[in-house]
Length: 193
Image: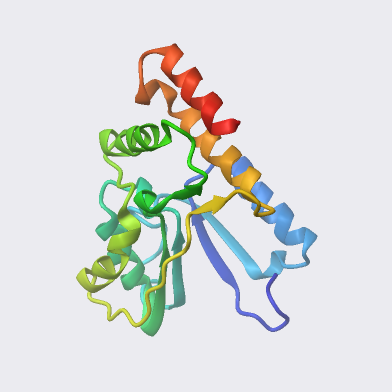
C-alpha cells in the first residue's frame, strides 16, 4: 500500500488487458488508483517517450530477468529510465540455491532437469547470482546485494505451500523435462508426500 503523499508509480506489463485491469482493480480497492499508471508493453523496448527517459526515481524488476534472453538489455533500459542519482532495484532467482528439508528422494535430478528447461528456452535460471554484474555492466554502481532464502523446511508454517508451488512449477514444465509419464508420476508422488 502506498502512503499518503506518495509519488505516482508507473508500471510496464507485458500482460493482457485483463491483467492490467486487475492491477487497477486492486489499486482501486486500496484507494491508490490515482497513484498508479499502467502501460502495456515490452520491457525490451519500453513504451516511454524520449522525454521520459532519465526522469524516474526508481526502476524495479522482480522475477523478470530470468525469463529474458538478454537481461543486460533490460537492466540498461532501466538505467536509462532513472534520473541521475535514481535507483535500479533487481530481484530475481537463482534456482540452484533451492533447499528443501527433508529433500524427497529423486528430487535433485528432477529440479536440475527443470532448470534445463529454462536454458532450452533461452532463459537463465541462475540470473539471480549475476544481478550485481548486470548492474555494473549497465554502467551503474551497485551498493547493496543480499540473497533471499529459496526453499523451506518441514515444520515451517509455509512449508506445504512451498512444496505445492515447486510441484506446480515442475508440473507445468513436464513436457520439457521428460518424455515418460511413469518417471514423472513417481517423482511427483515423492515430492508431494
